[in-house]
Length: 537
Image (cartoon, rainbow, N blue to C red; front, top):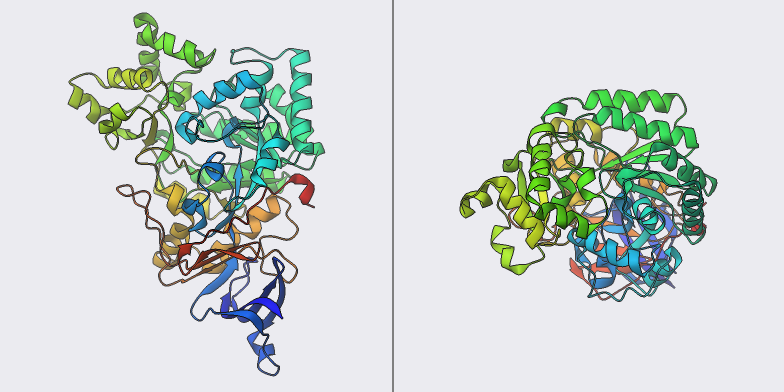
């Protein structure tokens, strides 16, 4: 007898086609049978050891988070309800050019410090790997949801070139090529880049093109956080498209937004640029999160020259009055490249997390509000935060535009990604709410997307980008990574005031045919594993 039959589900299968009613049979971690209502009427219905009544629930493939920052959270927090409770069954980590493999001891320490705001320092995780394969092996000991990994360009550059603002030598570029090839051979699905973060921001396009050639040879894709989402954003998108096309590499534009006042209402220009490239034969996809504010570290706003050399040199510059004044001028007057070429407005920068508990009283306030409490200029508050919190402060930037979010969401290559940073006292609610917000707000409340269309954005489209031959659809023979949700009640619990509340209306989530969420509660199942390039078609 089969393991599980899910009875009378409204199946939205991920293809974008209309839903249908069916019994779906799961065994051995796969979908072994789908019996549609019309067929079931004249034959005996399937039986199983367990039968789940799905009356009133939609059954869909598990959601794929194309931009996740769960690199250490998957290991630190086996529960991982932040993603599991949303119906996420696969995350793509190693994002924005900075993660924890490949590294040596020096680079590991540097990376840990630089992205403490994203993932915590990591002293509560045994980092017993140095290679991409070693990290994926660690995931294979058992995690809440599946995970794929992108080789992080910035980490590779730090390992070979360091944190200096200079081009790589020919020998260094050769070594970077080898490291990217090794990462792909060990199972990475592509290459990420963080071109507003050190040290990736120091790489010329020629370097990125050469590394993308390596990625293309292994069937992977290029996933850049490009050089600007503010002033010059459209030029930055065009530059990224040109790099990928020159390299012959598929391109995935991550958190594909247009932010700040200079870009209000300009999404149609971006979409026209993408359509022109697609129509000319480019292979491009993108992801977005369904919110207007962004989230990053406070240190990320600094100009690139101030970030050269690594954390200690950044702190030394901030401690020097003359250099600090120069940094302030670029931030507040001319527009720092770290802040996307736009002069910072401190009233839009909200402190969302600190690593030093003594600074906790500032969380939830804008830098301008915090400065008022301290009786000082906003820049001085920001500088003190950077120094006293050792660059670990995270912030929300309230600089987005809903019209841009909606327009990009409708694009023919759009997928979903949370960009969810799980650390900090008051993280962005997208970390806990992205996928139910798509289904609850944009489908049910606004009718902006149909249910079938939205599910395809969150399932089959990302699976196609990842070249997964047996995920992203409800099909016989496919892996039983599935979610059951109530279309009438599904909604994010997370808000900006309470960002860690779990969603409602998602009572069941299966990873590899096993219940990760059952009756709305997290089980102790750790069925997730690494999804490696060698696993894909």
